Length: 237
Image (cartoon, rainbow, N blue to C red; front, side):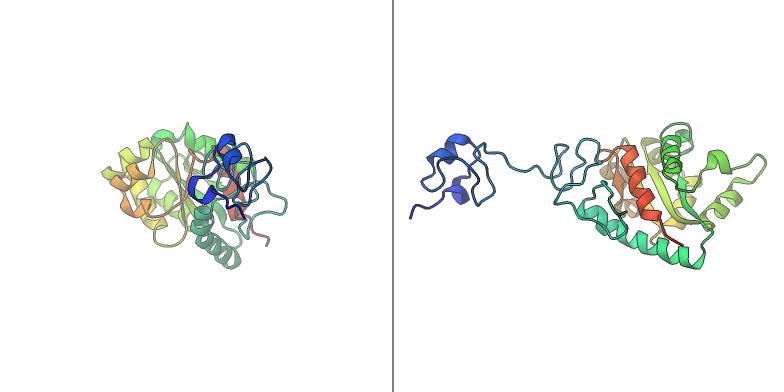
């Protein structure tokens, strides 16, 4: 019996498959290749497992479905995202059961981002039904900043940290953002959202924060990030 050469040479071209003594002739072969030599794309914008599908809104057949994902949801997750977000979900459920009146999230961000990406994320979250503590609307005139932030942290189930170049610039200066992060890092209540920078750059500034895998706008659009957070914090009370 003729033996397939795919395990050794692969059928990445039509001619390669045609030359195979076992598979020549077209159609599907048992090693996953088609006559066109196309292979599924993994972790790319073109689709496949862990893919954002361009907009990040499509669920591929190989994408894991977290237990908190809404019925019929088209939002897709990677295995790493499900693994990193599961403890956060457990914290959400525990705090929701103990304190049902808490806000969903506290949004930590650099002051320079308050009218840019931080506001964009806030608006998308609010549109998705998420209750957000956001300094631009919750920090009243004349209210001491640290007292308001402490209250916001205490009255939110989890924290989101918008990691941008502006935040990386401020963290070494031990400003307000650093104090917020210290409180959020104390438990499984923190989701970093990396935007316009990288985890490598974050690791150089804050190894502890970089150790918490979160979401990244190079993989998902800001709208998809907001949709994932909305699913993560949705709890039926």
